[in-house]
Image (cartoon, rainbow, N blue to C red; front, side, top):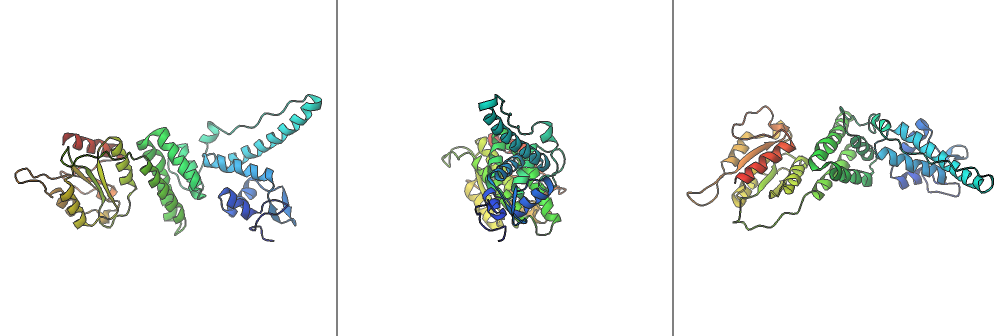
Length: 342
């Protein structure tokens, strides 16, 4: 019988346990080979069968690696926890007759043990990153969607939106991008899963817009990717940040055609337009100047928007009068200032 089939009386098969834990069967085999986190029983001497005690060890292993503990240390802690649990049961039974005390359960590694984390699931995290990045990277590589969502939500709640973006989301996204670029078409699914959940976390962090009369107060900030540009996550982070400053926005997302962008500017009368370009090939100064020259309003009181350039695509391209913020905090300060001045 294949070890990817369902469970039987001797325990769970590797395939069934992998589905239960939300990891790949190859991950379980790798943990068995590298760290000794394997089944106590092998049917016919070859096929793995995982008993409840084995499953408990792997559940601890998954929980610790999701929290950012390096796999080797997580495996050691999981094994020690299982041994302590068994000792506790033996101690409890002995206590009924021989007054022997129960062993204390093992604790999760903290402090220095967590700080010694290495590469996260094979992803090249660069520099001195937060421990949350490593846990998030491992969960993404495992395609563990619930763990990814939980860790992103926790990061925003614990550090605030801008710090969670700069110090948790961006480093992990960059690590996935580097891995994808160096591995051909591998890890595309990891990037898609992580990007989707980052987008979801940012939208959940966006406060609902307050309805206002179109004639009351300045217009909104328009957020748009230039034609041909598909990278929207930085704009989504900016949108969420502006919502927390009570600055109204209109988010248009990816690859907005030039004609549609001009029409939206004339209809909305925005105080500012943010044009995002990830790549130099999509950054068009002609488009930016055209948007900056777009006018609306009654004769004698016609207005134009402030145009703000966002993204690395604009780097090294002089654009007098078109500010280019250096990061999310700078962009929020710039746009909040423009809105307040209006």
